[in-house]
Image (cartoon, rainbow over all chains, first blue to last red; front, side, top):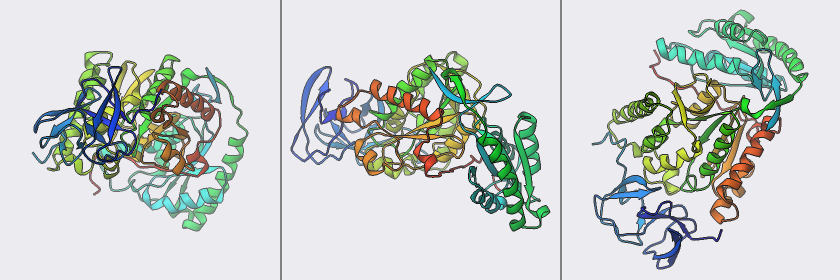
Length: 96
Length: 387
């Protein structure tokens, strides 16, 4: 197994998980459907955090493991960090 | 596949010969600790319960205490009471003896002994005798099909769902294929992934139970009127890259492998089924660990990305790191590194086989690091108010 900088769990995901610290502006290499793909990171991404691999519109579902992990609270561009600042949970929302 | 364990007179199998000092009430904690500290070869627990509890809540506490005494990893138990508590030490001891007549069981009541100093003295004398008997026990070859494995993840990070949990899933499948039992728990951390587990249920009734326990758990969180993200994922999970309970749960359920789900059982209920069972526990690590131990699991494999030290006093708790940096940084506490999946040195099957081999060694007597370091974590789920 060659070491990649990021892992895409399922082909229909719109985020990847980076496995090393990513510097702003660097090209992040990952494998989707057996093909190597590069996405340019807009900002620094800590290890284990997520990077958008498609543009995601506000209100759109965010997918990882081929399943729903939340919803975008703002427009997210490809290459941006996806985390609690722009992703909200759809579950356990006693505040709604 | 076999390991060397202790065959009990009632046919059950133990992998340790613990002598457990068990307070029935919070007021007896100090005496329990004093007895255990006076006698090598004993272990003890402390807890906040046992008095002014009502109905099902009192019954659950009593059930967890009794189940720790009857656990096949325990050869002898001394139950400590103050003398005026709701959950009486003599009742807990009598129930343990009723269920396991072969077991060495004693009771110490602090008020009857004339205070804590005398209670510790009397308890230590009995504990000394119990340890002597326990140390003479002999291990024999036992088939892996008799093992019950508890799975747990705590202090998760984004690598949990990529390395350690899928690897533990391989271990779970291997044990189930060998005829053993595996517990999936921490219901909170299945929210958002329940449909995937329910799809593996052996019948529609079990699938229905999956959604019922998730709905009850989510409803109890929603009742607090806040976004669950204030507590789940935890601040450490979030620092590690997990953004929502759904993301945490989807990584969490990999621990349970791929085999059919046989049943959904209550907190601390005995595991009597072979194959995969879901125990309805909170996500809080120690309440979960205690519930699975009460259910009769022989050992726990516990994956962690942020790092945790915990261990049950009666059930060996094997730690698996999701990333190599953690394995190196907290090596005193972590038994196995699954970070090799992230670096590409191994795949999840290879790590899963390594966990399985370690599990059989620990079942045969090799000490997990949490045992060597004396961890005795214990916390009982509460379902009612303190009066």
